[in-house]
Image 1 (tube, helix red, strand yellow):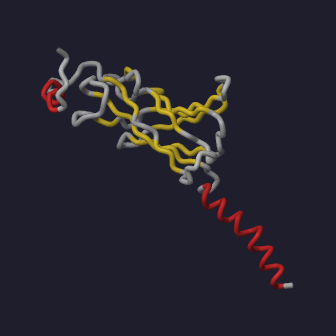
Image 2: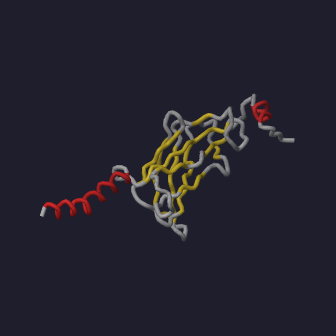
Image 3: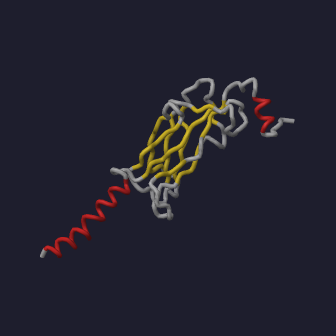
Length: 160
């Protein structure tokens, strides 16, 4: 009888405990990323880039028809990084991190091409980690810094 209970425990309870541990206290995924201010308006991160604390971002998931199926907002911390918890597998949805609002009025124009980042929020793709990392997203500074030409010259970028 005790062997039967031990086998029953192993078959029923242990997988449930393991699943709860993998899901992370009820959260299936943790999406992480950062939001920056493109201080040189060059379209990419560089040594003059600053990261925006207090910027608002959101996850938007849409089904194959384009219908919005899930959304969740988050705010960057003091280092310009965010972490958003997602409770369930989004299966076949297309999910993007999207810039919502900058915390800096002098750096509040979304950088086209860097205003959203695709994230995969399903376990049916071979990825076993519950952590998902979105590409950095950025806003453009209204007026570039005075030393931007020197900084960009290091990258051999010219506007000529």
